[in-house]
Amino acid sequence: MFIRQALLAAVALLLLAAFSQARAAGSQPTVLVLGDSLSAGYGMSEQESWVSLLRDRLAAEGYGYAVVNASLTGDTTGSGLKRLPRSLTLHRPAIVIIELGGNDGLRGTPIKVMRDNLAEMIELSRAAGAEVILAGMQIPTNYGSSYTAAFTAVYPELAKLYRVDLVEFFLERVALDMDLMQPDGIHPTAAAQPLLLDNVWPVLKKKLKKVPDLFSSTVRK
Image (cartoon, rainbow, N blue to C red):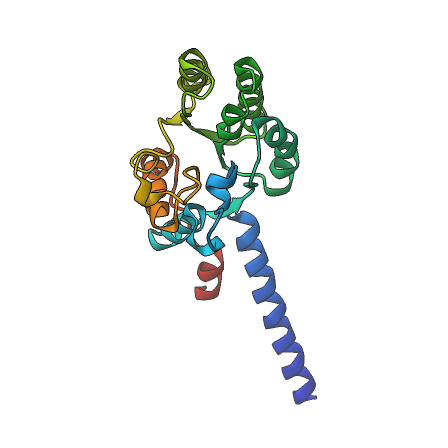
């Protein structure tokens, strides 16, 4: 009888621990990064990407946030818009970082198309209850100065219109430093990833709240 009761008690404790852990994970707010190869860690290991470094920094500074990297190499604002609804439903993020548009610019996508896609992503994220951060991009003058200027202006215009926070230029301090760029001249190296995180961090930090570790508090009780 004693052995049976002890086994039942042990099983109960295991179930309680599993439940508490699941509860903690389910209650943990999420930062969703929707981006292209610049956030997908192109040409490096996943652990070296700025998104992975963000996950580490959030943990180190005591922010109880999960980070989901929904970035895809080669992604455009059009394909990102198609993917976003499922990510919002699946992860229910508290914060969405939109890092898209660079591939649109390199392909000469009409500015209105890119702008409308980004606007709809902002609206969808807001409708899902998420805060939005827009990562601004700049491109070379391949398609002429008028197109380049109009492209660059999209990000601050949308940030002002929708009152969302803006990372003015995601590749600041990186894009023009060839030592920080891969041989293709488009993708940053692993050494550049901390700088990319530093470009995002001041904007993101304003939206973060300290979240207690529910699992740890349950165990302490």
